[in-house]
Length: 525
Image (tube, helix red, strand yellow):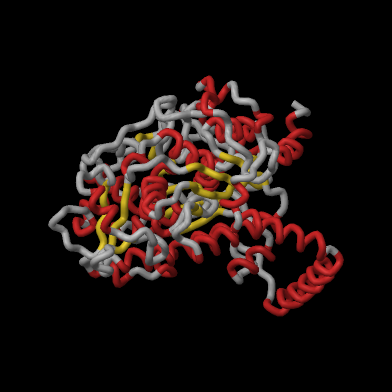
């Protein structure tokens, strides 16, 4: 049961908080003013500042030398082609591009022979939740460029082995969204199949995004740019990636992931306080709105938005194809799908996809972190509901508005109501993420080790290990008895450290303020 406070108590606490904030602002107004001034100047005047950068600047330092940077061909990736398609367009052929198709919204594979013509015929500024590009000559027709970044479909298999002291009376199936052989694959790549063509259609030459020190989103954004050939389809270069990292509780994998970022050519900036982080995000949003035609594109932390959520609506239809065609051990839709809940794209895409398919499947999202009541109230106006859950619900509402705009045939589109869909197809766990983002509890650590030993399933400490903990908790309560259960395994297993450029990268190339922050942790090893 969620902890709630009365409205009266909340207002009293808010008044007290506002008073303390006002006093703090008065006492430290010079420091706050300087932080805001620097953040605004750095974000808005970036293009001017870049010409004057020095090697030791903390503001997006110069990137690693070319000989130490990963380039196309250095890591194994999938080469897509025009033959790759989306299951979503099989169910809704109006969405599938063809020269004869006059539908309102069409998705076009950027390897298609007509793409060069289409990319010149559509505008560079997107409309409708910043997702659709209208034709210059016909503003009532829209296009979504898409690129296949990895081979689909990802496999489903039945988990074998006894991972607890007793066997549970239900089967567990795994949807494997990871690979040990292909560098660019799975859960994150699904998002970037929509996000990268979007950014290049806006003619962006640089992508700015935010994430924690061990952010998978930042890593795979940089990986997509360094290893794909997406820029060629737009007759240009791949965009440069500028990442803003912020603190998280330290764990050993952080140093490795920072090496990945450096070797992938990302330019890294470190923000060590909430004010600078918040200001940076807000100013980038404002710049996107007021200056959509400059050389910069902005990704939200985690990379989820209504457009990229289409990727996991499509993933649900992919799973449906596997079941219907007998290409997986499931012979009907699962009763439960367990997955991680971070920025919300995976979870809400599956929720909406299952609803569109008419499934009764419950998507159980395990949050990866939470925020204080004050941040919940400040951002969403509700201090009692988990931060990531509210963020995901907002994402679902915006995605519903987007797909309704497609004007596809069928009565299902008139039934798209976020509250109804969430009630029917969504559950969440906001306990298993503790004690901190990226840090598993002793219970979760034991589950990760036991599952790997007995079944061979590899889970990570930030997302999948905690999501599997939720699955075990449900099982121990008897909720899953005689149910079919699918675990959506988003953990990507490729070993980047096997690459010499990554292995030999000098971590001292990180910004000076980040090295100072890390020094006390790294020196303890």
